[in-house]
Amino acid sequence: MSPEPIRAVGVRVIRAGRPILSDVDLTVGPGEHVAVVGPSGAGKSTLLTVLAGLEPPDAGSVRYGDRDLGGPRGAPRDVRHRFGIVLQGYGLVSLLTAAENVELALQARRVRRAEVRATAARYLADVGLAGRAGHLVEELSGGEQQRVAVARALATGPDVVLADEPTAELDAASRQQVLDLLTAAHASGRTVVIATHDPDVAARCDRRVEVAAGRIVTP
Image 1 (tube, helix red, strand yellow):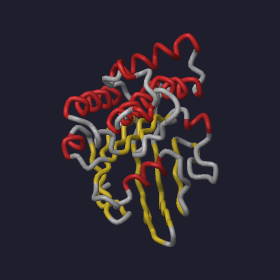
Image 2: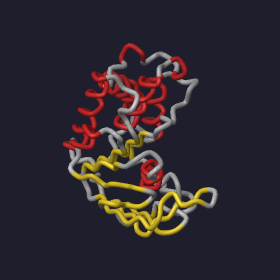
Image 3: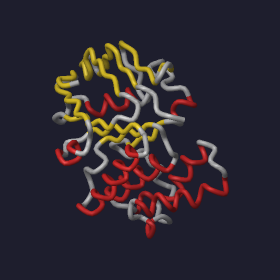
Image 4: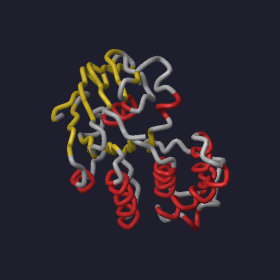
């Protein structure tokens, strides 16, 4: 399938009585490569979780094509499977190995059993973790865990990749590997949205969306 537009209209998110996002209107077109930039606490991470359908907004709407992502149950299952998501906290299962974490995501998307192990191994090799695939996540460094999360997001062949600071913990060589993979994902026709503090990461994207104090300053 091909990616569809993601549209946020009038989105508000409130936590502990404090607005995190206020009246956010944003459209990400199919196949766009977008950097979401702004200072810490601006609302970048929250914006990505809302666009992914992981957190329903308190007001406004979020849609992927004609499908609602903003209901109380979040994105429908079939839509969730079209997204590859790299969370800032990685979202890995610590008592599984790196390979098992990627395999689990593939199994959830009903990839053929015969292909699951080879696909997981290939994507872990792409992020430089072939030699660490059999290690438990809790045995991996923060940067290694981040790369497992990137491998897991890309291995499922998503239409949309949403990545929150995917290079924050990486050394120069690993950072380049991950950036090349995300750029390749975009070149293959996928929509890629990256929240980042890194100007070099933002420079690789086609469009910058600047967020400040929960509002979009530059759409």
